[in-house]
Image (cartoon, rainbow, N blue to C red; front, side, top):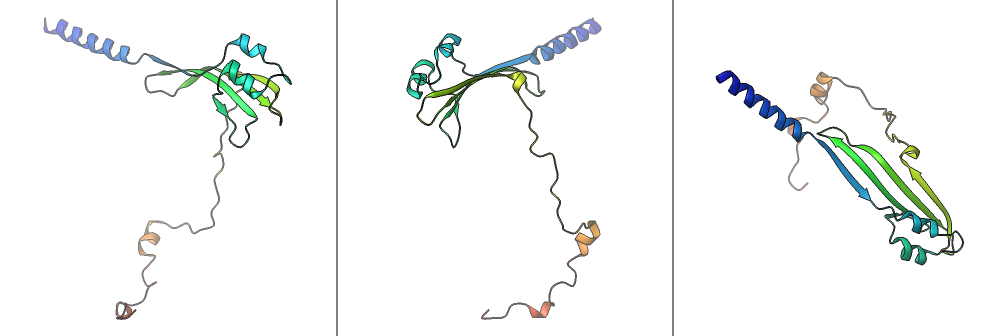
Length: 153
C-alpha cells in the first residue's frame, strides 16, 4: 500500500511540474490590415492620410520623422529558456521632405540580422598585477606617520 501511494504522489508531482513548464506564447505590436496597406500609394498619400488609414505608427525614427514602422512579432518560450521569435512582420513607410509617401517595404523574420556590438575586447595599457602585488603594492608609497596633517591646513 505504501509503495503505490508513493508512486501515486511521485507521478502527481511529476505531472504538476511538467504542466507548469508549458510553452509561453506572446504577441507584441500591430500590423495593419493588408488591404489598407495596399491602398497606400507613393507620391499620393501623406502622413495625415497614412495615420487616418493605419493609425499611429508603432515606432518612429529618433532623429528623423520621415521613417515610420509598424511591426508585430510572435514569440515562444519554454519554461525558463531563452525567448525565440517565431514570426515577425515589419512595415516600413518612408516619407519625403514634403511629407508624401516615398517608399513602402515589408520585412519578415528572414530579414532579421543578429548584431553583436561587443565582439571585441578593449585593450588597456595598464599593469597586470597579481594578488600579492595588489596586497603589498602601496607599502612605502606614502609619507611617514609623523608627516600627517597639521592645524590650519
